[in-house]
Every structure is written in structure tokens, then in C-alpha cells.
Length: 327
Image 1 (spheres, helix red, strand yellow):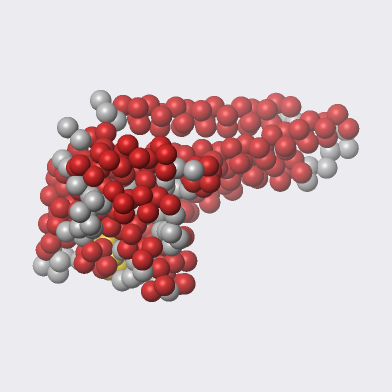
Image 2 (image 1 turned 30 degrees about the horizontal axis):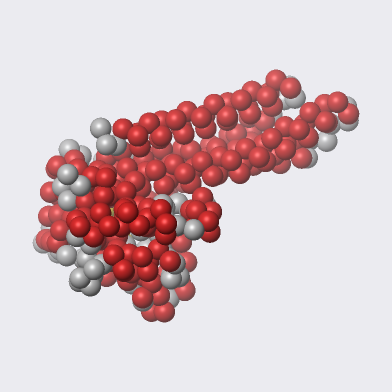
């Protein structure tokens, strides 16, 4: 029941996006009486299809993923197998990346094609229970099939942009029809930005949802909070050790990552460090509840605006949300 609100928001966002998109397409086809617009839609869908087919292979190449057998890394493999069994999904492929930034990600075309990968520093940084919580988060993405949903939704802004270009260069000699084309073009441009923001919003909701699934599978929200705290703090403290190439590669796949790459020192990180009362580098249940109390006063206007354009929730809000699952 605690995730009912997240599910409802996901359904409403998807429904609203499809409704807006259908209205835009209907307006173009009816008012402009065009038939060749289908070409632009076909191009956008083709791009999405190619991305869907070759996307996992590109991620493998960019992040230098090497898939492992059970005997090569029994700790990681056994955790993935255990959590996947709890979630009731087929065993995903298990991979390790040599990128020096600690993180984890799940991707793939279908549930049977799913892959769960981690970077080597993540294996060194997290304890057994924290690693299990992060794997639970990634398994949550696979269980929800939200990777496919995000891929499908991401084509909408692209089509809106193509419609804008179509109306911009339509060249109608009839003044009335040209004015209509201009209005629809402006509407398509607005729709492009609106749907782009909604895709980002959907991406943030799926992160909350995957966190909730991790808690359901592992049973301890403070462990997931502790893992997020460690990852974020490590990224901030060691940012000078990351190569520009590695940062650029992670930015390319940031929607897949367990934690958004962050190399600044936002106020939120300082709040988390203050909440770590015993300075052990972890977040326990008591500290997690304290974070929830502080979150409202800690988030400034700039943080809220920055979140609108992010694939991941604000880290302080995300950790505070985990306190809702403490029994």
C-alpha cells in the first residue's frame, strides 16, 4: 500500500503524456490535412527501435562491461541470484565495469535480456547488506520493466520536435493555413519541452519506486539509505580522481545509474554528513528518521529547480523518502 501513490503517479503521467501526444497528432492531421507527417513519426519510431535493439550493446562497450560467471565473483553473483529469486524474475546477466566511479545499473531489452552491472569500486565501498540493497534497487527496475517504459516515452519529445520542424519549413502559400501551421508548430515546441520534463519526472518516480522495491526485497530501508549516502559522499570526495572520459561516459547513461553522478558539494551532502551522528559513515534507522525531519528546511529553491531537469530525485529527498518504510 505504501507504493500505491508511486504507482498511481506513474499511471497518471503515462496517461497524460499519451493524451497530450494524441491531441497534438490529431490537431496536425486534421487542421493541416497532411499525410506526409507520418514520415516524421516513422523516423522517430525507427530511432527508438534502433536504440532499443542496439542500446544494451552500446552500454556494454562504453562502460567496458565484462560479464562474470559464478566462480569469478561468487559474492556478487550470489547476491544477484538471491534477490532475483525473491523478486520472481529470471536470473539476469551479471557484469562488472572497470569505471573507477562506484555505481550500479540495470538495462536490457526485455526481462529475460536484463543485465545487472556494478563498477569495481562499488564492490569495495559497500558492505554485504548495502550491496544487496543496491542490487535490490536494480532488480526493482527490471521487475517494473520501467526501462522499456522510459524508452517508449522518450520518443515523444523527439516526435514533437520533428513536428515543430515540419511546421517550421512547411511553406504553405495559403495565409490561413500557414497561420495554423505556425500555431501548431509553437504548440509542438511547447509540447517538446513539456514532454521532456515529464520524461524526467517519470524517471525520478521510477527511482523512488525501485528504492521501495529494494526495501521490500531486502527489508531494511536504512541499509539502502546508507548505500546512497556512501555513494554520494564518495563521488563528492573523490571527484578529482575521476577522469573526464569516465565522467562523460557516465553522463551518457545517467538514467540507468543507481545514483546520479554528482561532483559538486551541495548543501544536501552536508546535511547528510551532519545526520551521521556517530560518524561511522553509515545511516542507521534513527539517523534516517532525523533526516526526514530536516529535509524540508534543507532544500532551497535552487535545489528544487535543479531537480526538475534531473533524471534522479534530489538525494536528500530520496533518502528521506526511505524513512516512510521504517516499521
